[in-house]
Length: 375
Image (cartoon, rainbow, N blue to C red; front, side, top):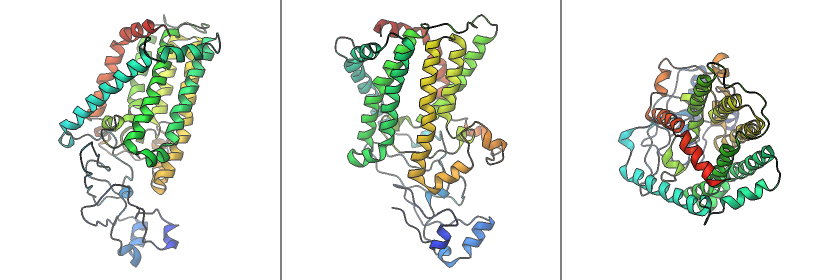
């Protein structure tokens, strides 16, 4: 529950440091007064000196800002430090000591159940609806480019629409149930779109042919690899993705967020650039237009949702980050710590590195599986 003890004249002039994040508890009241001029002025005000708590948004917690709540686990207390920067969460923070074997058993079981359901209800031609869905969309036009764009449009409307309705949906049915609903609808649509792209990526009009250019394959490989390092931060906590931990809308600020506030959009642009350069036909151009267009909308929609959820805390993060990679660093709004590299030397980034290499090696299997569906 939000509360503020600042006088109204101050609350309009300075960031509200008294808002406490939902579900975050403090072991003891902590008041941290940094040595900035603004803080000294605030500390001289009697109302500010009498504050009993400090906003989670303005404090860095040891290890992580939000304590995860797994199935069957009570919420943990967060402990505040005496530092007022950064206001967002420490991205990709992962402590093996905080992990519970039971949570990962739940994760494995849920993942298996979801994949089985998608296979039976969507992928398997004899029982699923995926073939009928793709055939219906393909019947709209003989142009593979048009079908590709329509598939992306359907996915984008459903995916972004459900994301926009998240606050209302979670209040209605709860965070975990809404995550299951969100994934249950989005996954089949994403799968259909990916399979159609794989099956028809060499159809359409050839616009250029550069695959014989020396070094291009290596360049495309490097760009694709880098793109996944940007794409991954949308799912920093796999336990939340599977609704084992209670899903939350996070305000990340460290790691790759220092480079760009919207890494998934940047990663998708890099991926599209690499594959369009390599394949060079109209179908891939159409797919890239759909993907990039969806993610550009996601930039606006994501900022809008974060501003609605976090208010002044998001505005502060926004002021020292950028959409364009490295822009905030180059103009001095983002100051990289001396040990910045340590924000990447973490298990989640090492895991996504291994997964990216695995996906590259699995390309032949992915292609064979897609061709078998005849979508």
